[in-house]
Amino acid sequence: MVQVRPLKSIWMNGRLVPWAEANVHVLTHGLHYGYAIFEGIRSNATDSGPAIFRLRDHIDRFINSAKIYRMGLPFSREELERACVDLVADNGIPEVYIRPIAYSGAGEMGLDPTKCGIQVAIAAWVWGAYLGEENLTRGVRAMVSSWTRIDSRSLPPQAKCAANYANSGLAKMEATAAGYDEPILLNSVGMVTEGPGENVFRVKNGVISTPPASSGILRGITRDSIVRIAKDEGLAFERSDFSREELFTADELFFAGTAAGITPIREVDGRPIGTGKYPTTYRLQQRYQDAIHGRAAAYLHWLTPVPTSRPVRA
Ligand code: PPE
Image (cartoon, rainbow, N blue to C red; front, side, top):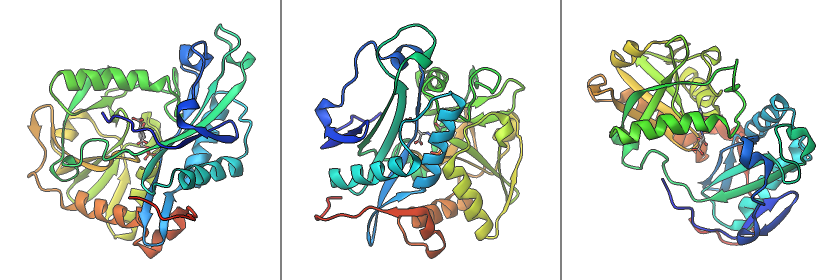
């Protein structure tokens, strides 16, 4: 958990407002019923200034989440993209986590959100490694959760809806209360899905695998980037379901997400994973770092530069 340090501004419904003024009413509909969709994006420092990683893909996913929830977004894709760029530029810090959120606003209570206006806000803050800086090399200790991951029949996991994170939160609290760093959730037929805020990857006999979208996961943009990088590196990759015991017998396991980056998993349910060395994980981690920091020509098209008129602080 990281204390959020206030920055300068937050984008709310079309304009930048001072950080302290970006408030909502306690009767905000989305707060009561979880009717909010959001994104998590990162801006990173590169040699030619700050750049937002895969902005278009994140905004596209945001728009898809809105579609799934019948939310009419009052802003276009281009307006939302520009808002993210303006927000990073205005706050003057190159390395920030960007959080667009759309939610049903105050006005009517009751379960039908279509009577409430849709509000859109975008905030940014400084967020280091989600699962701990030291765990980027050491790896986290995970446990398989007793909570079943939500699925498309109840809460569609492919929509990044706030309500999904109540399920994630139950699993996360269970894991931390039991002395672990992070849970891994299984679906209703017992196959591995994902972490509470990251996708899961396995390496076995030189083959990298990750559960398919049909297992009931968020289609991660980091996940997609890893698939592309693995291909480019000539590594064998497949989308395939795997079970709990296949976690235990993996050579390497790792979590992947915008906030978490690529974080090795060193233990599951008290069983050490592989030999405790993560050559494939580190190799992907290195290439991913190169990609997000503009050091890999092949992935420069994933970056949206943020124009800065003034010197920026790291
Ligand atoms: N699964 C879930 C459930 C998930 O929340 C995320 C992102 C991912 C997979 C990975 O998706 P992507 O970031 O596109 O590679 N989780 C966000 C953190 C949520 C939080 O606020 O906590 C994130 O990484 O931004």
